[in-house]
Length: 268
Image 1 (cartoon, rainbow, N blue to C red):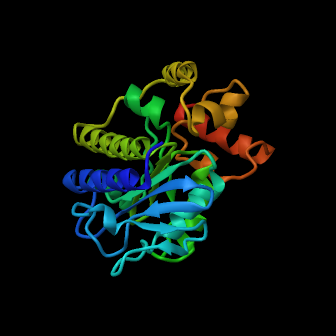
Image 2: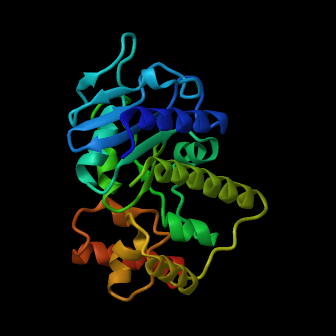
């Protein structure tokens, strides 16, 4: 079993990685790891993630209250956002929040990452929707993220940054890398005249590969209402299928079907 100290070292290593890859500036970003249902380790506020050592890391309970923190350190002000993810996704053991340049640019522009342009992104991420803007350190951000947590493993935060989460710290970090790489490719392909997207059948073929791999997490391949009914996936619907709690409602299916038909060029 990995000790708390080793986990703290891993958090510091991931912090340095996101700093070195220009995914954060100055003291931006935060990382957390679930130890058990009542204890969590998290990065402190007001500290550069590229220069942390294990004694910087704080321990909090499920409400974000401090269990242990060394003098001069206190938990990130965004711990509420992390706690909401853990509360709603028992399968999640780590959360990473950062401000990667390209992904955050899409978040600022109000453009979700939903275009199917490369196999790895379609298989690993599916769609990356945008959670509406919330004031930092308030419950507005957790409430906004809550709309998508059950449907996606990565979310852009409007005018803010990106949030990824998974069953391990490394997996959560790698999802952040994937989001940023996807965003950069999408941006650069737009500069070259626009990306060539996969067809609905090609998307479904990639979804089937994901199912065969038995990959963990939440993904349109398993949760898309259209996919469940044998219809074309709503992969590039803008993430709207994740913004509804009742995914079986006739209204939701009708709305998604309309969007899919528009994408296929059958709208009037």
